[in-house]
Length: 300
Figure 1 (cartoon, one colour):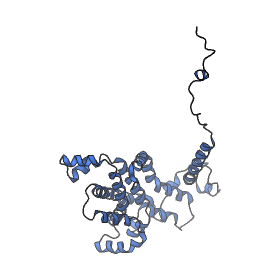
Figure 2: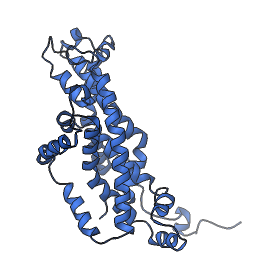
Figure 3: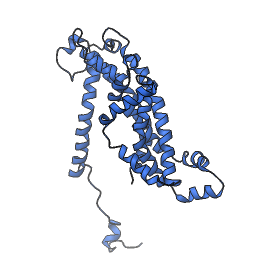
Figure 4: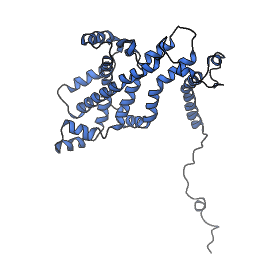
């Protein structure tokens, strides 16, 4: 039987390496502590809104805004109305849907073709065209309100949903074109050349190669446009009339109503309802959003 008493120390202790990091190291405490504080900071207003919307006004007047409701009531949610017309948010919701859906589809479709053409089908003046688009992203909206009002009035569509849809589509194209152009530029150029050799044309390459490989960036564009258009107040109040006001304008009318007693629970319920659509979109497509950003959505 072999004598192991004289074996080298390394053979007894096994291979050595870096010591495992402690879970409660100062670095981890600082990192996770910061994340928790930031999360609480952003979630606290949502908590207050939801809790207040589930309370009756007698309980709201007690002033304890952070406490959960003693008696849960959904009456404030059904009373989210504007002035004397108590269908407020429901009408504004469908107006927002009718505005958001075509605006998102049109802006993403046009911007994706723009980005595809600018990177793979260069034409004379393409750099100037792209520069103008990028410059348009930094022009304050307020500067262009009055000229657009005159333009839409001359076209006969001022105060209509289609007028507002055109406005959202135009203002969404510069930043979306930049996103699609940068994403498409990260694709292997060999794919494009091989498709050209095989006889594929402009639309053949776009539909058969670009679209199937571009789901993440389309999700990024979808989230940006849905959030921006759904939450818009300025364009909605300027380019439409009361019967066609989107949900955000209706919310403003509810919150700033001066008739009767200020019902904070109703205001909070209306606010939560207005923000549900962008919140659902984020939850459903959050992973693809991160993939789109990581795959080159913000690369120059």
